[in-house]
Image (tube, rainbow, N blue to C red; front, side):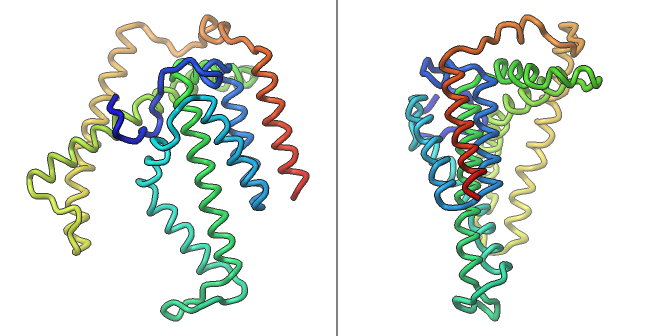
Length: 265
């Protein structure tokens, strides 16, 4: 792995830290608890509390925070658009006018909190996938959703689907970068001032990327069929999961933070 690049979304980082050793169910529960808490309550102290929890977990995971934050650069347009829409479309006291459109004080506050909520969503999901292998993640999802077996819900297939998608996200991103560099060498103008030219350049990446993804999915399906995969639940995989004392401590801390987020509405 090259050290000068940011981590790709969904990329697992091998390690032996405290966070790596936690049960995958603990990390899944903690991730969703953090996400739901900031979605339910976007007060500044709730956001600060959850960011502190994520930063502490990243420190314990021994993952370089700078490498994770570099991945945020690719999401800059999403953050800017979210802030702009909130600032313009939220009713309230106008601060200034931009091209005949009023930017309100309430909109700026809501847009800022939206950026921090998106940041928490990105960091918590990245921490989950960086410290949990796809196989363990599938085991955790299958174990947590196992009661749905009584409702004839295909839990095992769903867990395999999620883990496989997460497994191929870094591969697809890396392949997109390779295709982009190849198209640039052929004269594709990704930074052209003309929108039509830029769209054509991006289409020259999307089309071969989609074809390669479909081919990869077909190869994976053929490989699974050749190994007689039937899609049933794996008791060996889920039976290896064990909650330990540190899992109970982690769930207790996350649950306490979640209850504070609900109470302090």
